[in-house]
Length: 259
Length: 118
Image (cartoon, rainbow over all chains, first blue to last red; front, side, top):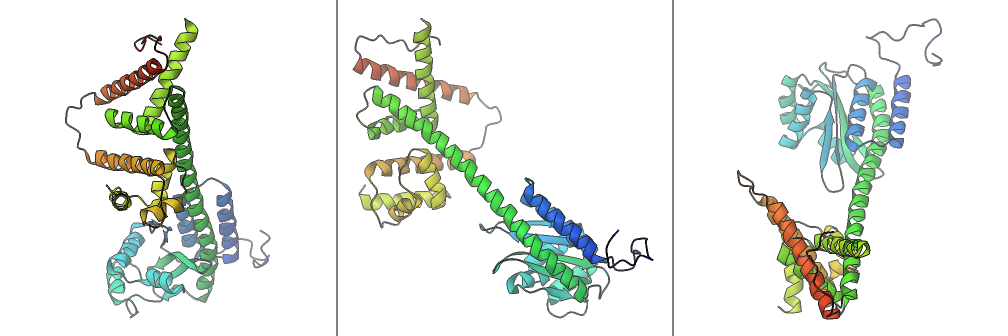
């Protein structure tokens, strides 16, 4: 290991009780995230990765959760265990909690002890039995826009300090870029698929219109009216009628060629 | 139906079919519509005219979306009948009739040969 922060006289890695060298973990975490962008991964995979990284990059963390909202208002989330999932769900039920505050104010939120903190009384009271004592929550910011929040929690009070805040800020900054890009990629892929389908249908209808014109239809409008009327009679979409018409013409022509 | 009622009816149908204007535009594009999304938006709000042919394409797009939505609510019977095949045959028959009718009006000497195997 060539990390300059690790003294040469101390070859074994950090003891479990000591805070692990965050610069090493973070570098790994950040490079893992940039690698993900290059591969074809989904928003869900990105969420899971960010959750895992948040849990491992902060010392003493028991669980982590990430929530993002896309441009249509659809919420996607990932949680590393059921306690943190429940704690997250309670925020939306009670409409209060550190993540919602981090999200809305775009500021990092730290709770040192949920049993004494007075800022979110109902949420704090509800999550104490789940073993959530200290909480750190960071907003996921892309430019000026808040696209979600991520949080880590620990069952011990006073677990997180200024150093963890710094780690969370760095992690949240990278996670926001990754998640925003995964979202745009998924959206772009969806749109491209819809457009391809639309153009294929348009192609078939244009060809069928051509067939009808060749057979004496007065105009494109007339040809479309014939297709629409057939669609109504057969209770099928115009695209199906167009494809059936093209198939029938092709079959007739190849039949003529064979005889 | 006056043209004034028509755009209102179409926008109501769009809302009923749970389509955004961009979604509806994609359906309309798939049917061969040539207007852009702004043309559609303006027409549905009664701000700009749309030529009758484009209106018909839009109407067809809406009717198909409404039918898809309606069919998604249908409850299947416990003993499903082979409806799909019948529907396909019906379409094939209609298309053959269409081709025969058209070729007869254009080439009266041409014999109907719709039942010929391919």
